Image 1 (cartoon, rainbow, N blue to C red):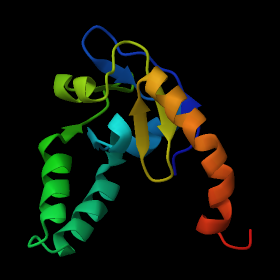
Image 2: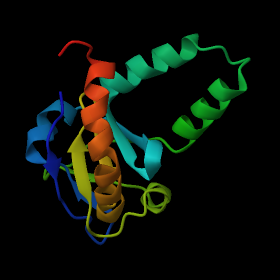
Image 3: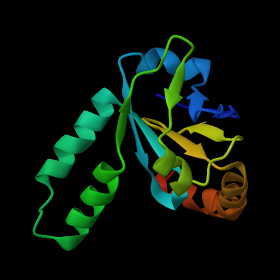
Length: 142
């Protein structure tokens, strides 16, 4: 499980230091790809495999399935953290998420998201009130 918010930087080669708390779960490798809202999503190989298995069951006769699979897999990059815990973020993915030097990395349950700091601040501010209102919808009675 991934949680927390961190602010690592991209180095001049487009590598990102994974937060130390996330590294043990990703030593075997990971997949980084497009996420929604113009962030990047990082999956462990195991969780990306589970996602892939579920997508295999989706009907390819539906245009929305084909569109989603194309966007997700065309941008995917399999990476293995180096000894310092860095991963490469390919140029097209950096461009997609508007990543320069500063980044925000958040744990999001079974995945990690990498955000441009301004985009994350805007998203967080927009979602704050909705977050309070959604608790009953997502978890009735809590």
